[in-house]
Length: 419
Image (cartoon, rainbow, N blue to C red; front, side, top):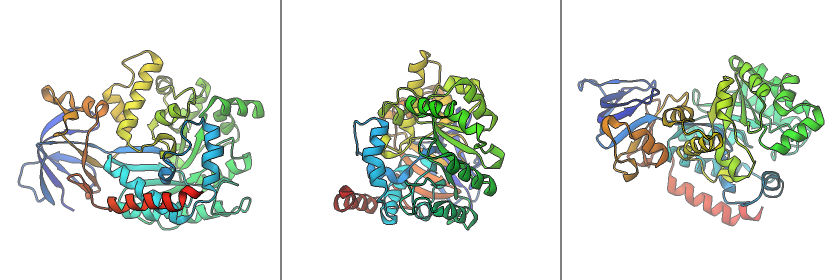
């Protein structure tokens, strides 16, 4: 596939230094300066656009967009036990498809091309996302008693995930499967180890909620004499990065010793500041301490039920502000560091509308552009994945947004609200 040429435009790559000129965006994710005479798929007037890498959302429950606005004002455990877990036991494949498609529409419209997801009916999620063109690592839950489409204690969830992981991807190169073990307070040791063993055997990703609340940490210490990450390490749970990797979501109540454990295994520790603040967890990840311990920190929104949004631009702003606030240090997570956190590993491109007043003034040499989009916001105009346009000129091409909205509204009013 030929590249796209964008003329007279701004481009900000991984080094976060604005460049102005004519650029070629290649299908492999690279870019180069354009001479103006290359064979291209199309030429786009970029005079009112800014090109950046796309966002990477490292902790989601995409179909929980069905739960957006449910259980408002409840603390985490009450929220889970009264508003979320009872509803999730009655989820169907049809509901998951509708929720996933709506979530993908929100992702694309806000500039995200990758999600690391943990939710039920994982096969349906994969098939639905494959149609939208986004990338995803889908870590299907194997947790006994919570998985709605499998009998508790049957082992069917584990066997099903093994089949998905070892079978053909619904879109090779973009959709892959992994293993989700919910948390140390939901999974017993046997469940944790069976999930870990499957991930190691198949070389797939392992995903878990870790140290999200002070109560979770205290309960784990009372039961095992260790904090959650220490406990997981003691039973041999973690899969090292070269084997497929482990994703630990939240990590809000973590000791320095546990940070060293995370770093030693190359774990992706995912900062979810909005969700943690909304559920009044009392603490969020300490980014400076994590970086000092050389932990690989990523950024995630969590689900729409606890965040109300899958907008990673807003999540990046929240991460920057809460770290500055918590550490009394305005230099923590400056715009460049925050942008790198939110886009790390991206191979894809998005464009922003410079005709949006929130993106102005541009400043000398474009020096205000990054802070403008990060702290003020902006409209995503185009989304390109491997040369494929998922969104062009402000319109998503791979999803009928109006139909997705209508389906979401109808299912919540006619069926989902009864659960």
